[in-house]
Amino acid sequence: MAFDNVFYVSGFPQVYNLDEGENLDLELMGVQSLCVKDSILLISTLDDAGYWSFFRLPDHDYMGKFLAKGRGGNEVLASPRVAWQSFFSQGDDLYAAIYNFYSGDLLEMNVSKTLRDSSLSVCKVDIDLPKELFSFARIDSVSYFCREVNPAHTEQTRYILMNNDKYVPEYFEKLNGAAVDPGEDINILGCYYGYNQEKRIMAEACMDMNIINLYSVDGGPVNMTLCYGSKMSSVQAVQDAGPRAKKTEYCNLVPYDDFFAALYYGETAYRIHEGKAASQQIQFFDWNGNPVAAVVLDKPANSFDIDFSRKSLYTLNYETEEIYRYDFSEPLAFLLSGNTNHDLAVSAR
Image (cartoon, rainbow, N blue to C red; front, side, top):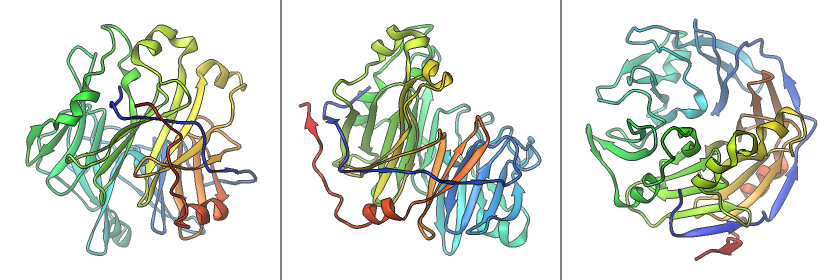
């Protein structure tokens, strides 16, 4: 599941180790994921009275919970993980485009107005989306990126939905051609994804393979695969490895203006369960695919985000329901210094 333009990444120019994080007790149950937007910390939970909880930074003052479970026009059938939704601005207000996985509905939530009025402000978008998309991202007001599983559950098809018309750009076909054998786990093709609205570039970090695919959504110049390590995983190799030997490669991906960050593990479920796994690292790349820095975590995480204003990193582990805040001053200063352009380690072709 890779492009012809493959680069092997053997390391990062700068590596930082994080420890002594602050364990936050926000009195939440069933935490799922988090994100930071301006001066707001959003955390999605399993609380069906209000799946999204909001806290004001830096003191984590509670601002309320919204988005309840239900079949009404302003409700959802399951908790939408905040880290997987598309956020955008209109005027001075922050919005969230929320895909309802089980119904196919798309909701637009005015986050700013919701918090100002302490009342949910949301509307349903008039768009025909299928249920149970594996990926969904808002490109702009009329265009959306979708990744849909075929009826045989052997392939995942990426396409753009524009004004309710579906089309598959030619350069999507290379990735769409990847397939698992009938009866195999379709999640072998699973990816975490992040979209840069200004650059119109999508990054996908594979769950079970040590690769990140980076490509323009409208035929732009970016079209490459990054492989972390000396040998690139393949779908067939993951199938042949079996459940015990299969590795969890990437666990999350977050896009930022000047770079994106992918949470790397590279360990089997057995080693993770036994406490023998190596430390996770957040790998930072610029939008040209250059490796910039790596940050080694002292505790496992599933979700993370950066508070740029207060130079902090937040991590969340939904298995232990722990949320940590770290001083991120030193790594962030390097990431924003402008001196982070480095050539890729080795070109395969």
